[in-house]
Amino acid sequence: MRVLFIGDVTARPGLRAVALHLPDVREGYDWVIANGENAAGGKGLDKKSYRTLREAGVDLVTLGNHAWDKKQIYELIETEPIVRAANYPPGTPGKGWWVLERGGFRLLVIQVMGRVFMDPLDDPFRTVDRILDEVPHDAVIVEIHAEATSEKYALAFYLDGRVAAVLGTHTHVPTLDAGFLPKGTAIQADVGMTGTYRSIIGGEVESFLGRFLTGRPHPFRSAEGPASFVATELVFDGPRVQAISPYRWEEPA
Image (cartoon, rainbow, N blue to C red; front, side):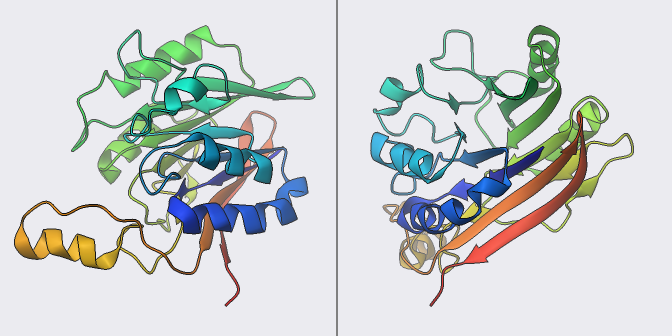
């Protein structure tokens, strides 16, 4: 089995990158997963951005701390293959996990949110434990949407040998640590951002600079520029990942 996990799709450049590139390579993967929490103008997911991702070939869309920024998410999240953080309190709309199935093979995808420098949600460690016990599966990918690399690695070591891969999202900068932990779990601390890197994590440079230079709030504006398609490729051998590698494509000039 081959899985492509696309890093945080951000605003129009990110959607453009997915629409341009994914259809060309889609046949090479059993499943494609994309973090889409920044797809609609840099914050949130709406019907139009969701449709763009799905029509390009994305099987499952994950969210994050901007999950609720667009009201249309409430119309999508109960019926569509969309996953929000599983460690939101009970009663939160949607699901924190999804099972992708092909040829009898069940891939369980779980997302949790970190708590360091983030909203104080429920315990992500015990949340994953509970889902692993309750949901039948053959292999597991855990996405941790978190700020702190230490927290991402802590969760990965906690789950080492029990899940196939732990992939980090949220910081929008790809890390060069793709590899394996001692008991065989694949890890990459952050998959990165699919969008324009002529930006400050997808935001317009001038608006972000204003925050740093003045110490005052400035309106967020998503950046425009050449698109980069940034992802992580996982090759499975049964329930385990055999190979993990970063994946990058640049929009032609």
